[in-house]
Amino acid sequence: MTQSSPTAAVLVIGDEVLSGRTQDTNTNTIARFLSALGIDLLEARVVGDEIDRIVAALSELRATHDYVFTTGGIGPTHDDVTADGVAQAFGVALPEHPEALAILGRRYGDEFNAARRRMARIPEGGSLIANPVTDAPGFQIENVFVMAGVPKIMRAMLEDVAPRLRTGAVVRSRTLRVVGVGEGAIADLLAAAARADRDLSFGSYPFGHGTVGEIGTQLVVRGREEAAVDAAASRLQSDLAAAGIEATPV
Image: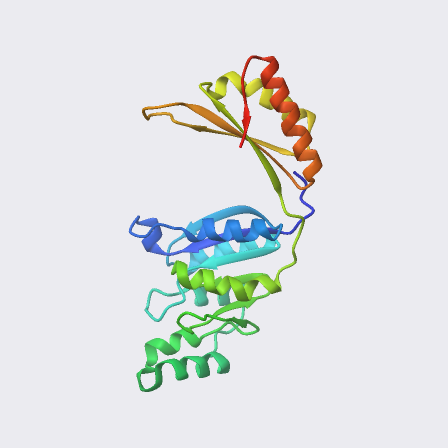
């Protein structure tokens, strides 16, 4: 698949994800969000609440992708150190942002304490990402978008992020379902199809293994030109039929 469209990486931050206490669903949400915009998500990483690890991962990812999306670690507690790590990665100060202070002040009133003021710290040069759920903003600095870890809040923040992104051609896909045949029986045919259409992506996704019931695999053809994807899927279906393997479009 060509790399003419923008590229992205996700950096999930949080000890709770690494410990298994919290399941990461944000990467899936961001992947779907980016796919609809024609942006290729090329990598996803998880790091704990350690500033040095955040700095190292972010420094590498932002240099090798058009966009980086981080989730987690921007709350009011001592272990919310994402803003600190981002500021260090960019080599800038981490002052309280006047607009963020005003937003949070209106939100909390007399309960706007020192812990909650931590959420107003934005790396110098950053702009706010709106949070319509709890008001505490995320922020953007250059090609990095820093968002909350709570899935509901993160999803809401994406609405403010979308208009800021350069979009690409949306990836199209076609799926063939093969029942009663394992991946090993179709691997050569799939590899031949991939060699014949190097601008497309061919994937095999088995199902039913280890369970009672039918087994098989889903064959998925992906690309940015719909006509080319349709033609390649049709050829693959014909090649499978010639080998005595029935594949049904789904």
